[in-house]
Image (cartoon, rainbow, N blue to C red; front, side, top):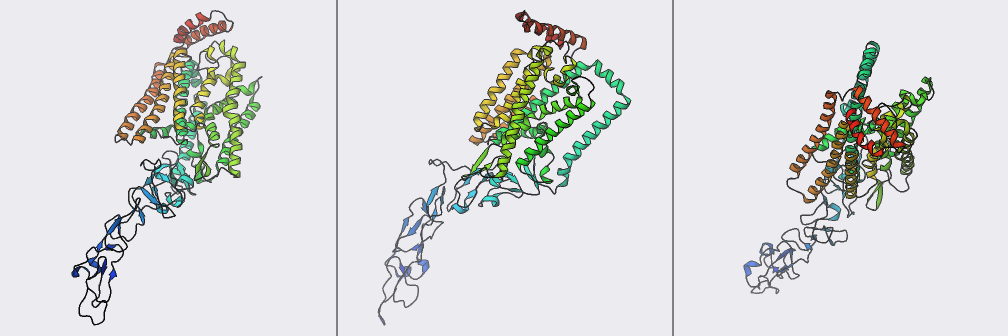
Length: 602
């Protein structure tokens, strides 16, 4: 109660929304902020702040503190007893101007991917980000998937590099900090202070080279005649094994390169645990920068990596030709030199990785209206000399490798096509020795198929990098792989039936890889509860397919691949038929008899 007159003989009950907390009050005060009092008659309900009730969550008292009113959505309160509607409801966040914006990205209530917005009071500056996602700055409204996944981006309410885990930095946390390197097996930035992991690859490679060199030197000195006799007696069987292991290596190159290209464009990874198998066979891509952890020796830009790779390959070519010229004693001897032959084989092997490195330099990602190189997020795409250098070198490499190398090899096969088609043995005349590794896999009439297969390798690895949409990537890869399966099945172009069958199985392995990406993407989109079990089931099938491929090659080794005499007779028959086909004689009979000759060759 209160009395507004001095020395009054009675007191008046405070009205609704007011209290008189002190004895002898001459006036009533409004209930404190966030509280109200609807009573206007009971004296005992106006004596203290406790007589004023807290307004419920989502409501605030009216100006007279007599009742409460609901906040205008999407504004709300943090809890009971709030004086103002100063925060946003869940699924909204407060922008810098004090207004609420929806966390959804389509206006239909579907939450923006990567944003944690399930509670009241979200603010743009401190918006919670899910693990595996990145935000550039407190004022940024865009969220992006991290290049290296949850290991790089653990999530939280920070932005920029502060959102990155230890060892990561840059846009999308896509680069390793200084004194860290990207482990090619786990795709995690590891500290260079872990000397074992840094030195291990060099020790392993050095040990293997030393062991092979030691065994070779010992046998050259003490067992040369026996080795040459063994080689002469089993030459065709050794060629068969060499051809088939080459096909396995090429298949694994495609499997690895396909995964890298799909991930490069933001696609899904291989299902678990098949992804670990792919990490192991990535060694066949011959990415020495990743394998030897060169970032721990010296951190270099992508342009410098391109330059080192390019100059290394060119330097090896110059050295090989120089040694071939110095050791040659015959006409055309440079091309017959073992060093030059080995260099041509090296070019054949490194072609996909060199092409992938070059094509990767042309792509940029947008992060909050700024563009960065996808392959090196620390380099901006506009007005940066490092990027200009990388693009220039990439252009040179593209001209020489994915364009120049197939054309040069095709020209050499074309010039020598008659000798190749008339050859009486798998390898042909000595003059063909520098390109024999290309055509000895195929029947004589398919002299051009080696280059066609090179194009297939490039289309399924580096070529996919140029396709921006991951879905279109998969469609192209599926069309190419199935097209070649059908072609190989109908033509049966390989020298032995065993190799035809192996090519067929390897082709389906690539199709399985393409389909696995589609299944993995579908499971991720549906957030399927049995996703892990399905991934494991798919992985088991794919690993068994690789076991079957290796088993076929090993079984052929045990069987011996047929006799040399029969093989030479079959080859001679096929060469005669091929020569007749060139002259336009008996083409129908040639096709029919090729099957018989192929069987004999096996």
